[in-house]
Image (cartoon, rainbow, N blue to C red):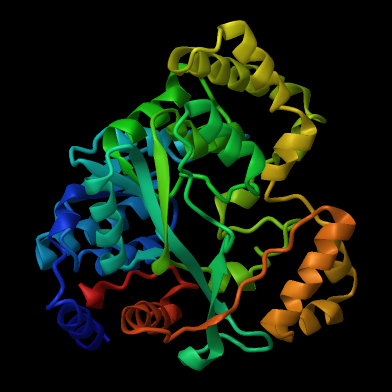
Length: 415
């Protein structure tokens, strides 16, 4: 596997100019996953990123393995990797997760930065396209492109054959945010657009903006993962616009075992995702101890709006309080069980039928459903796991090392 995939990766990109990648640092948070981190580092080490920062909050025995992996990658590829250790994440509401991310971002020295989870694979040509756009458009502070998840096709089992897998687009309604005014941008991105469609969290940022945004969590003591996520996803709009490259696939996320562990069921907690381990925003109103989280979020929003716009603090506070209403925040609750989810959970055969419906039929049903229940169904047209040469390389990197997942073994031989 090592020589095959490594040779393919090296040869495939020989004729492409990837020099702009030197201006970008990847920040890779990881927790308790030797296999995912080793695979992620091995893949991205093939490309000339300015630096890779590993933010590791794993238990000590996992950290030992991760340090060895980092050393091997450095030796094999000459990659500039900064390895930072953190205490394991133990807080009930997950605030330590984004604080870890934020601290790691403060170590970035390149012009651009991006947080990349250890199950994601960037496609370097599309990353260059994003960087070129930011180089030419100084009024934009972030850029990203199409993101797909690789998962099993309906009724298929895990195998090493790419024919058993497909690519599903995440947030297919995503688009650019080009409003010139701060308030107009925030209103359009946060209130008018479908929830999360214009979030900035896992996109390329101008580093100075990303550092400022993550530091808000420290300054305002945002100590929970849910409000922390909202701040990190939308506060960047205080400083500029977002460009979405809808003509190129930018990132692939591996959800094969997340899918198998039941992670796609919003009511089930999964070890494959930190998002499922903590209370959701829709549950905050039932928990007295979360009141302080809401108060700090309101203070953060009020203060920053009064600093970066002409709105007074008192008026900004009225706005901030209004957006913490259940009707608004529940839109951003990825754990909210929709009507269609309840139906699928009660009648699994309907879910199986839905999975094989033609794309056109899904879109038609989705439109009718949204009119009746005022809820949107995300519908996208699946792509082959071998859709293009660069995607095939990602697919093979994933599939040829799947056997190591369950035992959390590093892919040492790839280095």
